[in-house]
Image (cartoon, rainbow, N blue to C red):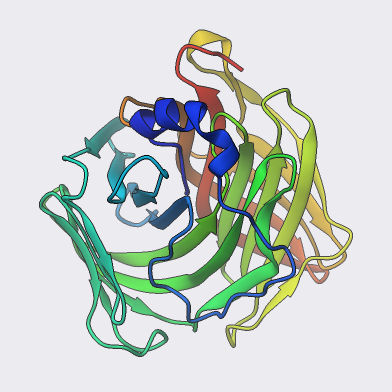
Amino acid sequence: MKKALLVAVAGLLSACAPTQTTFDFRVQPLATDLGPHNDLMEWWYVSGFLPEEGLAFHWAQFQVRPPSLPLPFMVSHVAVTDLKTGKVTFIEQNPAIGSGSASFPPLRLTNGGWTFQQNGNVLDKNAFDLNAGPLNVRLTPQKGPVIHPPGYSGSAEVGAMYYQGITRLALEGQINGRTVKGEAWLDHQWGNQIPGRAALWDWVALQLASGEDLMVYRMRTPQGKQVQLIGSIVDKAGVARAATNLTLEPGRTWNGTDGRVYTLSWRIKADEFDLNVDAVHDEQELLSRSTSVAYWEGPVKVSGTWRGQPETGKGMMELVGGVLGGGR
């Protein structure tokens, strides 16, 4: 999450939309390209569902480079769900323009007092440390970095983002002051998309018990028209391939604020699998004042078949519902 437009920038961009960065769909970025770029929009995102701990979380740092500002604009989000109590804690970090930083290699991101950094230059070996509000964890890659096919999310109609990440990292440390262990997922995207205003999406990141991982991304216009549906399978060895003949069937829904409706269960089918994905905790809508975007972000459970064999898993889901006050 991955994954929303910065509110202050939204106003600026409305006056200078023609200057958005051109996106080249022919370019295939490197899987190791984790560092910052000069594109209009960029984000780094870490999430995880820790069922044994009764916790789920996500952290994101957004970097925006509107032409009217001399320095990039940074905003960060942290959300933690305590599934034992049902409490969702959502914190936003929105300091002054130019106060955050992003550098590489190795990757180091700062925003206010929050930091995310890798302890070395080898992406598939060196651990990352995330210290952001209630999150104080170390993340060690279990697979190498990948480019999710076809290399980007989005379209010419809604804007597009190059898409790189690490789909499985071992997690240990503290969340909400509790010592925890589990697994996490890392995403990194950059391009010219303006989420919430020009683009909405439904996204799931699933870690299966068999050791394979699955990402599914459905991009939509604000009017609901589907412009892209992609799926990326990352095998046990960390090699990504496209899910073929992918379909996404919506199930039950949940009503958020201002008439927004979020689909919280899905049947996801492709040549290799037939999976049911269902939200673990419904009340996960986040109303971001720093980005002026409403989105649902929370843990999911997975059941079904994978290559004809029974399969289970866990993951996170993000559903972008639109701008605050606008409904869906």
